[in-house]
Length: 70
Image (tube, rainbow, N blue to C red; front, side, top):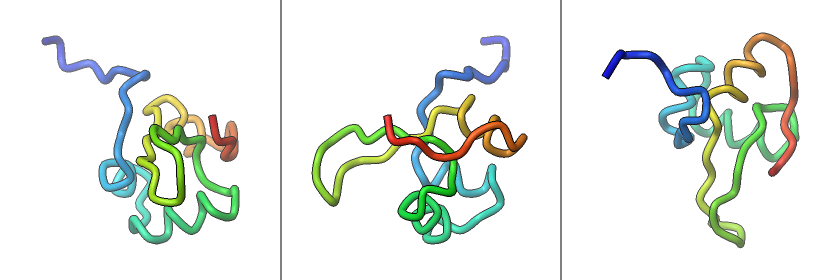
């Protein structure tokens, strides 16, 4: 393994929170308000599993996009 980060890697909210320097609950609030990074919902319903694509998280940090549920 080269150690390079995969931009298509799917991150859990717990893995994403330290990258964006927010708590998991603040990240959840931003997701609900539509102001956080783009996310993917892997399962339906209110308790559906959420993942963030690494490239979307980095683009959000750079100010390039806001949330858009995929």
